[in-house]
Image (cartoon, rainbow, N blue to C red; front, side, top):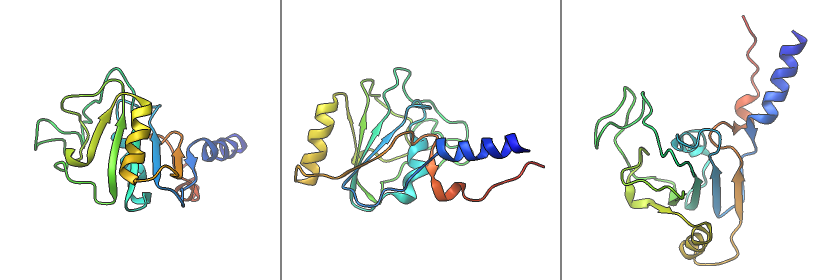
Length: 160
């Protein structure tokens, strides 16, 4: 049981990140499951401050995969818990940084607030342009695809 408790404490460190508070740009790095970039939006969506620019780093040469449950299969159909693409309500603009942009990405979001950019310097310039100023405050979630806010992990579940 001591090993289990030690594992839980270590997992809380590895799989959690602080919820950012004062920022203009939120960078969601998706590196562990970069071919399922929308996991980051699902995990962190409710914590995104309204009106900010979100930069999603999803630089995977394999592209995005269709998730069997919530992924889309065509334009308006998908898995058992699929929702048709919809506008991002809280996000001013979603910039996806990838050297491998897709013609029809598997992201379950409407395209009008999404911009795919291949060059990191262009990503930064676009964020500055959208915000209308250069002195932006950025928050970074290092592994937004597998990390969650620390408060989610406060309740320990014990093995049966």
